[in-house]
Image (cartoon, rainbow, N blue to C red; front, side):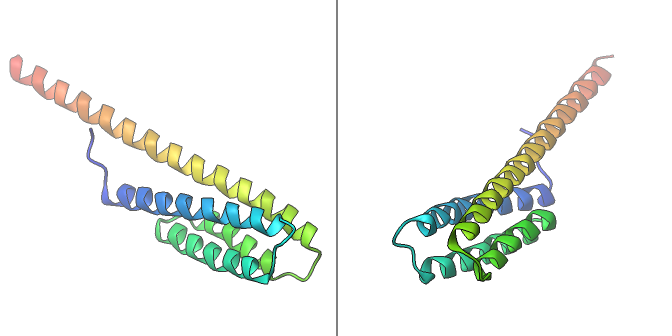
Length: 130
C-alpha cells in the first residue's frame, strides 16, 4: 500500500472521528423527535455538534464544519419543535453525505498514490534490466 502523506492521515483521522460523533448526533436528533424529548437532549445535540465541528475544522474541512454549526444554531432557535426536527434531519443527511464524499475523495487519492508508486517501481525495475 502507498504511504499517505501526514495531511491525508490527519484528514482520515478527523473524518473517522467526525463520522463516529455524527452518528451520535443522528441518534440524538431522533431522540429529540420522540414524544418524551426534553431540553437536555437539545443541549447534548449542541455540545456534540460543536465537537464534530472541531474535528472537521482540524482535518481541514471548514465547509462541512459550517453545516454542522448550522445545526448547532438550529438547536437554540425559538421555533416549533417540529420545524427544528425537520431542519435538523435535513442537515444530518446533508452532512453525512458530505462526510461520505470526503472519505471517497481520500480513498481515491490513496489509490492514485498507490498506482503512481507501483508504476514508478515498475519503471525503475525496467530501467535496471536494460
